[in-house]
Length: 102
Image 1 (cartoon, rainbow, N blue to C red):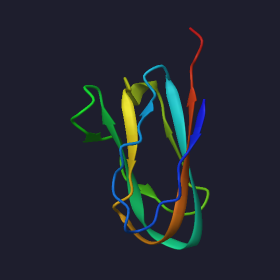
Image 2: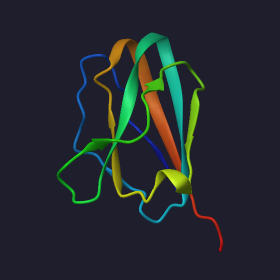
Image 3: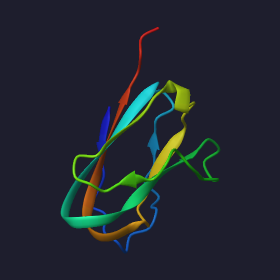
Image 4: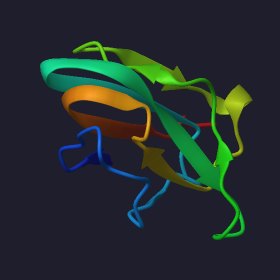
């Protein structure tokens, strides 16, 4: 499936919106931006639903930036977007999950 976030700006914080990617072997994250954004975002993950940890490195806010997570980065649970690194501009984030046939 595919998920596109609401617009994030520099005053936003990590929200309650989560995405369950536990059924994905891989997923990709792509940034769309307007207004010359600066800073970065961080994906966070939890497997128990309450304790959040960083997933991978921060993601630059350059329009079109594509970051991939494959099965060697998992297993995955719930993920969310932490936008607190944004220092200017507006971004949206698209996350698309994939499941490899075995």
